[in-house]
Length: 188
Ligand SMILES: Cc1cc2nc3c(=O)[nH]c(=O)nc-3n(C[C@H](O)[C@H](O)[C@H](O)COP(=O)(O)OP(=O)(O)OC[C@H]3O[C@@H](n4cnc5c(N)ncnc54)[C@H](O)[C@@H]3O)c2cc1C
Image (tube, rainbow, N blue to C red; front, side, top):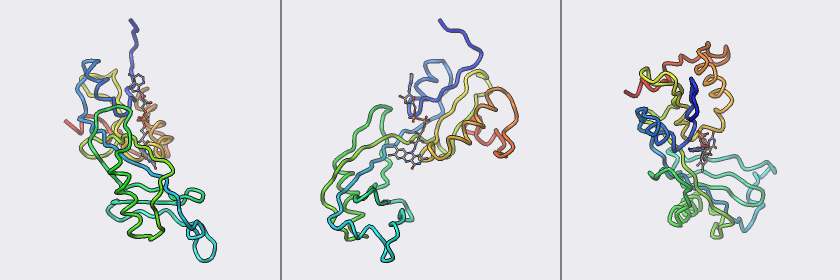
């Protein structure tokens, strides 16, 4: 048995399961599967702009697909958000085909052959903002969860804010966020 004053639940898609094991109310986290495909491009010279610049990353306005150059290949996604149980998810061949179809429709690059594909879970609570902090009734059990599709880019700032919240300090000066905006209580 381990005794500690503070626990940080940073278990990604599993965060609600861990909370329940600790007797702490769940956040209502929804893990959603997202698929990424790397497709071969028959004519890689088309991955450059006419002036020789790199193809920018392109995201369809409603995120029905996005793509960017990956060496001589194209990295793409159908922007899928398929509800899934926490676990080691695999890409569904239908989502891979959908990604190829959607990106081919807007690029005409001749995308047919898949070099690799993978999928992972992006987890969201109801308002799709991260959750950092504890329920008022469970002050030692701190969530650090629900980063959705931005957990990599937001990691340095969110981790600094999270550390301040756990030790009861003020948010770092360059992260002027009211901790209440990310606290679990907003979800009650
Ligand atoms: C396909 C895809 C593309 C993405 N693209 C981007 C992007 O471009 N930019 C961006 O910012 N974000 C992106 N994300 C989102 C980003 O990956 C997540 O927001 C981020 O990984 C969340 O970090 P986390 O540490 O909370 O969860 P995770 O990365 O899921 O880490 C949680 C860890 O906890 C471990 N764990 C769970 N339970 C236990 C336990 N009981 N004991 C010990 N360990 C446990 C798990 O094994 C896991 O390693 C993408 C996600 C996916 C799936």
